[in-house]
Length: 191
Length: 377
Image (cartoon, rainbow over all chains, first blue to last red; front, side, top):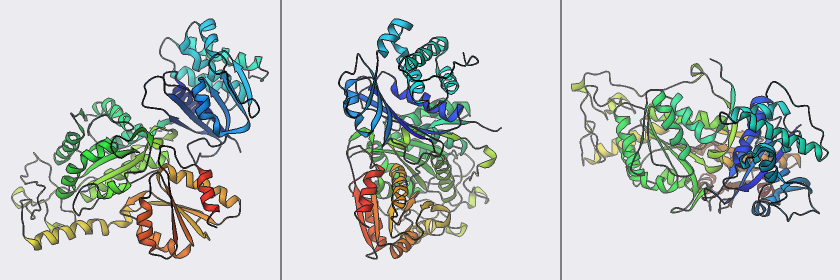
């Protein structure tokens, strides 16, 4: 049985809730799995600690919130501090290393990538942090197929930004490979 | 046309289901965590020839859907706790005048403005007794994405069939989660429309008991002239203080519910066979309880789940039978203890009834429910 719990944490405005929805769409629409995306946010439009849980399973998901998290992407220190507690011991924490510096190394397997810097330097737009993060997430976990996440990102990307987002997604996969995670070949038809 | 599975937000699916159930009028005022229903309706209703209106406030929104329904159009509004409070006066009017409407209340923490972006289940009693005076009402609390769809359709159908307001109770978790769902074809959806009068206009009475417990409701502007009032009224709809007429009319309204319980009551049961402890939970906490029961069973604990989808009227007979069967009923809910009061009333001392109330905007996770189960077996 496949059952995988992911959490993306950031601050309002970074787009983690949308990234969670795209990952769930990849699972449900393109890989034929079951998934629930469940967001938590504050009354602040920008700046409040925000998280999204994505549970992906080959069976219907009963409880829509994560309770034993396998993978946590943290894009803000505050979000890490508030939301890491439901991670499994030994679970993977992927952090944007310039934004999240204090992580419980003894408890988790910590992976560090300068995601925001890469977005600015390699793509030229901070807005693609989420696409890079999705590439990293799927590259590291294999929770959905590469083809599925490519299709989901392409379907959600605003008009005129599909290429940029797929480039960013690919950058995320390259970073996952650099960290030592085997990555499926990039599919051609989605690009 | 076969439709694809797609990811639906709970709120959006409520709106789409309402449209498929025949809703063609929505009046509302934005309020977290229900606003996506209004947003979706603002886009979709004009596409299907319906009307969306953002009213000046919550009270006016309730008034507008009552008016639209009287004009013969299936109507809905959506709100959250603070707005639900404001709607109560007009909701009572819809009860008294027997006007079909659907009111969605996406529960957040309260009272007052409370916890806008966090879930609660604090409006359960308000859904039943929020407006003053004796009245009958239906409240449905779905838990899974497919139930959100079918409960919305059922809310309209029951409302139309019984000329009664129906409350759809969601909580913030269900409203904002996204889950895969394939929209049914319209041929798969049974749609109920209110009975229209068959008598000529000069012989029509909107509350005529001789026409059955649910007298037909004519649409305004269809040639039938009749009076609508919030005062107690006779069969013509004009005010009366005649105690016999009032007694008979209120008893007829109660019969509308009592004689249709088979259609109104809806619940899910999980692992209740042989259970010595039953969890009774609803909405998102019903899902948490389902997961907790699975974990308990894996540990060899004989626990089961009764998950009412119809909260009002309360499924008394089934719960009474459960109280005979089990030693303990555990009632986790995101409030300080509301539906548990109804469980206690129905159990009437036949088993232990244990509340597990939690507030503060954080749901009751399966491990917490499992611990409470373990502590009782």
